[in-house]
Length: 203
Image (cartoon, rainbow, N blue to C red; front, side):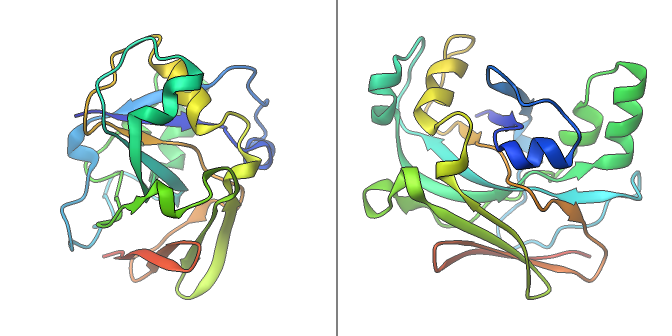
């Protein structure tokens, strides 16, 4: 199982990061050790002083595929979840300045907490899906899939040009604006529409 993460897939997030809007999807990988075991809290890592949340809609691949056509991409997933792409922003900044890869800032242990439940896509309006993130009860991120630069099906078609997608693979589809830091003691709560998907304590 692999975790594929899309970068800068919401224009306003790209702007808040002072980054150009991509003309083709950008993606990077996280190992399966980035998943957080169910019901576990997230422990703030000791190698960063600037850990940021990035809430994202997550697609779980349900069918083996390579070089998938966009018009058939919808056949390769059924379930929709919600997750966080934790980013050690200080380490990422160092990597950027030195021209290094970003894995140290993105792919560390438990950096991809995922909702325990997934929702059948037939119950959702995928091209107009609201999702939100609350920090200690305060709304910090509000996104809608209609604002994606590249749609879910476009992402699947693009990524599958470069690697085979396998059953159980996870696709993090990008984060909207509003990313920010977390501290020990914070609680992050994510929702798809009105359904609570996760409630994560930072320790």
